[in-house]
Image (tube, rainbow, N blue to C red):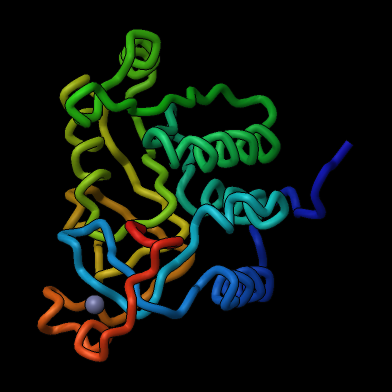
Length: 216
Ligand SMILES: [Zn+2]
């Protein structure tokens, strides 16, 4: 039984455009005054990834797109980032399973230790040892720091990162910035961010910072 109305092969340009339009809806691309996680920069926009992934249909569609865009034939493992990236990891793994029902693909996540450093738990290390060609998936790339750390971790365990797939990238993050051969993001947002409160027009106008959203 198929749960979603999605094709077995690639999404058409029209479908991808429709998906990009859906993600740019003000429910997901929210206007306000936000503090982003990357170096505490401020921005008048916030991409509400949690709202996107809470929408089962949209989550399935973005997962399908990522699976379609970055899971080449030689990829053996998909890696996600704990904790918020786990939902996307499962979505992409599920999409791959439906796209390629006869193919074995390991799906593991990088956990965080008590100091907030990314680590792989024992079972994940074993999968990586046996399935070395890795794609990393992440919901939003803001500074890329977390993905860079996880890519280093994959390499430290003998893996090779072939690509990074993301729903959204901000801040002109490129494959080069991340130190990986290939980066594909469904939504590319080149939105203004401001380095300090002094440079932020919203701070200067005394607009309160959003307490509901931020750090994305
Ligand atoms: Zn501000």
